[in-house]
Image (cartoon, rainbow, N blue to C red; front, side, top):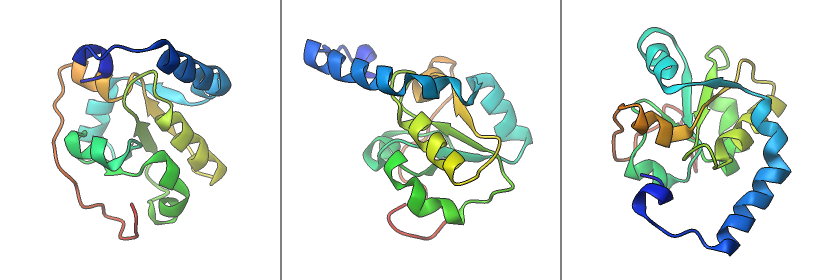
Length: 147
């Protein structure tokens, strides 16, 4: 559930801060292929992908897509060396307004990962499409800290 669904009011200060970040990083949203929720569900069932949840650990623990690794955008450089480069990464964040997925995707691109995609609308779109999330922390297949 995103802030709008929870009924949490967005103040002018919050809006301006988010808006300024979106303007600053706006170009980045056009640089990665978008995958919608139904396409992601199909890929999870049929193809090998590296699904990355770029949100912070507390958000991940509250609910995430089954099989996703929690690699917050700020930790991508620490964790990227242990990811399977043969699997195309698909990254998601909180929603379509949050930039963590795009920041993580951009960092992976600078580390020479290929075929990087971002889940359009993030976890909020996944849930709106009727797909489920699982709570709790999944032990990642990569074994370095703090990922």
